[in-house]
Image (cartoon, rainbow, N blue to C red; front, side):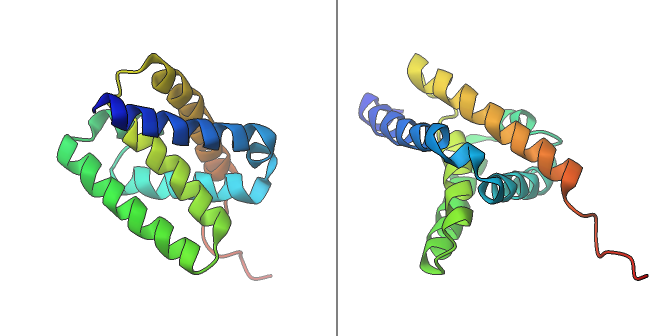
Length: 135
């Protein structure tokens, strides 16, 4: 990744981390969407955890996943599904940071990945497992 690309990525990550600190992490619906999206990506990539998924992505898979995330994020924005788009953006930034050399990006991504892992764990713990039983 070029220094210019890393500067752009760091700026985007900083904006998202600021928003997460100010309000996003306290928005239960947004965090549920983040956990659901991370769960879907992990299952699709046949990985049990977010770090495991990131570790197993090849450069080609990373580019393909980023393209998919971009398309889904744009579709969510077009449908005014802002919290879904927000969750997708966080996953995309985490994936985009794979291989970054900047210590600031690695630190910020570590914090973001921790939040993703927490949201994923909460989603898996609290999401319903299929339709509710009929009484």
